[in-house]
Image 1 (cartoon, rainbow, N blue to C red):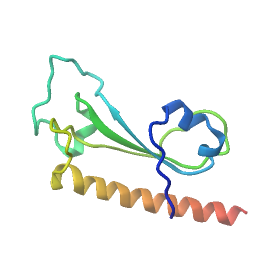
Image 2: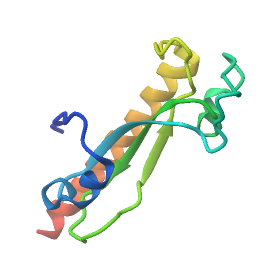
Image 3: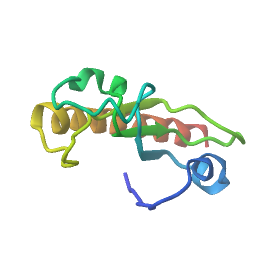
Image 4: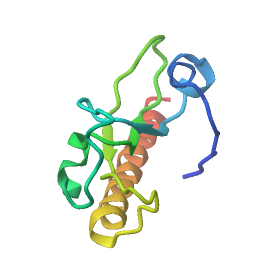
Length: 122
């Protein structure tokens, strides 16, 4: 597998650009939880790694989009939210690193299978 890093692309562009859509894409963004309020500052350890997508504060989210020839929005096939870290280090083995490595292993497997199937279709 070969990867290319593209920095600061608008989310809509990643979905709409024909060239980008023709390749699998792993998109990193920072998102606030659904119920974020400036009055609800995070307390470290209040949300475990398994439930990071429910974190109210700013946290990294990775989404895998497979190659698509279809125009328009395609949903992510895999998604991984990392639990917030008020110091923005994301260095906890149990809370950040191990879940991230497991997600990246799943991404590698999914993309490898998808690329192999695409080659068979040619």
